[in-house]
Length: 558
Image (cartoon, rainbow, N blue to C red; front, side, top):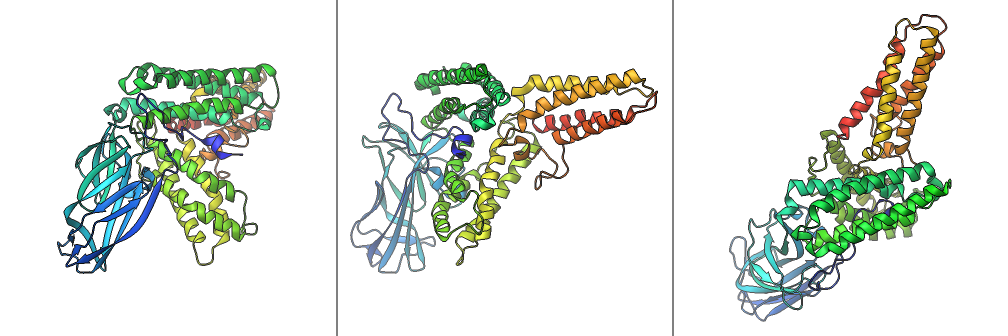
């Protein structure tokens, strides 16, 4: 199955053209980057001629008679220097330490400039160096004002070191007097750092993932029960989207995006028609991919609005990693040490830098659990999943680029990349609220069964009534549980709704423990031969339902 179609959340490949025409098209992922090296000749520590250095469409020009000094203010003593220039227009190319941008700003583009002579590294120069920074494809338009920030290897400058008006060719021209990474950044509204907005956007994110899953399973895995799940999850999305639209459609930040809001409404309605048609058909296998594609408009349009507003949403890093790792995951899928060829290894090595760079942007962010309504348990799960993926990729990289690639590790760890991604991704979804009615029905059935099993001297008719109540509980509970065991993706397995996340077959808890104890309760009742009967042991097993569901509710902040 194509992972991108199954799991992709909000990832956009084009930037919305608004009132003004944006400078070119937005490449978002993988973005564009370019590096180059040049040489400057020195005489008595000064450049003998102007040195233009070009990376992509950006240029740095070092003037004639420029004196270079190192961090100790010592003038370079050599006769030549090596100049390295890197340009990029996507934050995933930043060093990991630079990923946390200044508040209310997002990256347009940046350069990294280093100058070396022997063992000396240039820190300053006595003449301003001119930078012409290309902003094509970054979402800015001529006339926009961008702020300049520098990164010293540890932190961004505490305030802007200048501002520049973008020219008609979508370039920012400025001068610098010290070497660092220099970035042009777009200001973003305070709205996008407010807890209220982030909470609302997070709720929309959580409600969006669920219908994406249920509408993109193979037709053979989409019987009427799954179609009904798709409809229920879509109904939840409609409610959350309606609330979001009511609050923000008229906000100044979204004034230019009215058509995008309307398009989302249209596509959600189209998805609803497709799902309803499948329900009406009564077919045992249903292709809901058209509904899935309709829902993809939400992620495209929201991404357009985010980036058009210069809003750097933390979850976007996970989306970008998804696209970065997808080709790799598909290429290694199902491979073993025996079936992995040398050509496969070469191909995987070529794809790995994109996997690594997009993942490095994920680990920069510290997700605010409160915005997502997460408990500490879920946040810990996310942190653990992040650590596991980081360690997995480190081992994978070592195996790929070893003098003799380790095909066993490549196959094993390569196939874990997708699995670990799913656990992280699904942690941001709300898989319970769309099925409230079934949960309440199971709760009610559990209360009835516990009451019926509370007798210590039950007659044969009371035992029969208790057995009927337990059977009703089993039926109601299995209906609720069924929403999360959809083949070929088991939500219970991916989210480790078990005690042992390393082995989901051990120590079952939540749903599996409830099922097991209901089964034991029925067995105990079937073994009763003498009356009056003490049902205490049966009641104890039935109380597992409330104990385990309380744990799950707490974990999921339900």
